[in-house]
Image (cartoon, rainbow, N blue to C red; front, side, top):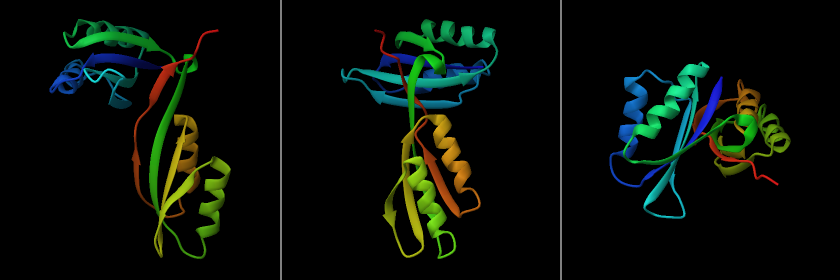
Length: 159
């Protein structure tokens, strides 16, 4: 089972290390971690995706709330949120695979952001599930390097 934690923390040196240390000491798994400043430059938002059994996921929330630098912890499931991930993929292309790469980009809504005589850098921003589908579709087509942001998420707007 996966859970998303949206953690507002004080934006100062060492906070990320303290939060990561909590996960390390208690052997909690981090599937994804993204950190960025909020509209208030003194506050950062950590979006942490973690997996485990129900007890483990509850313990993560409790332990995060105990941290002095933590202002607020919101937890939600993937179904309760809008989530996105950015991925950049560098692929080697030739006359045999160029068309297949471009078709995959068109189908999945990715774009070519850089190109040389035999390499392309592709960009996609979508749900983590669709990003993984895109990566799987490119396997065997010359992936050289991948970098991903990790999941960013907000709860869905209530009506």
